[in-house]
Image (cartoon, rainbow, N blue to C red; front, side, top):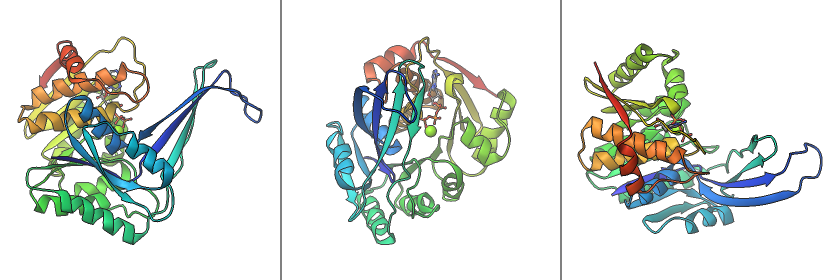
Length: 310
Ligand SMILES: Nc1ncnc2c1ncn2[C@@H]1O[C@H](COP(=O)(O)OP(=O)(O)OP(=O)(O)O)[C@@H](O)[C@H]1O
Ligand SMILES: [Mg+2]
């Protein structure tokens, strides 16, 4: 079983206008809304690959219900409901004239300690040995920065494989629990290690330094420059060149889903890296937060370039 946890999900509401007038009246050309949040996205990406998962997390009010109701069939919702407060709504205003997007993100509802305790109980109650636990995304107000560390420490006692995709203090604290997999992007890894990551040598050193901190696998994602995966002494770089990038939203989440997909099947690092590059690159070819299906990923995998680094 794969469980994803989203502590701060969001409804992403996209509003399209023909030229944004700040301080004036804007006519909305079209609008749409979809459920988001990193763990939710990982579950949706897995579903597109044909893989079942359980989506756990903190949900509140009508926006929370909207996210739960919109999950694909292969995703089983296991929400912990907030007694008060609503799941946040993030607004993206797309200006078709300038091509610019203006984003307004809410922090999310404040979480009481008792609610967090219920969430922990719900997550840990579900886990069985050899399950996968994916912890991804930012924390809402009131949630301590060591929450991922605490969840993983308890999960690892149950022999669960822990995958962490976080940033800043929750990533730094989370590393203390020795996650099995971490997937920082370039900026997240640079901030964590306090060193710039431009160029192969710096990236290679960074992955080795991160491995020294305990994770079994480090996936350093490099946006349009692919990803560098490390396990033990192995280092593998993979990349899919995408001609027309439509939206990179959710590419990192797709990569996390792909890594879990491969690990579950016992693939070697190169196989995982190639599949992950195809999946994440495939997500970049799709509009909005959309995820490629297994057939498309397998097709794209033939175009992935990979190198084994020493
Ligand atoms: N422009 C691009 N062209 C091709 N592939 C891309 C592009 N951007 C991202 N990807 C793919 O997606 C992976 C993850 O991207 P990135 O490093 O930007 O992650 P991220 O910043 O964590 O993303 P997210 O916003 O989802 O958290 C990359 O390693 C790459 O495989
Ligand atoms: Mg990311």
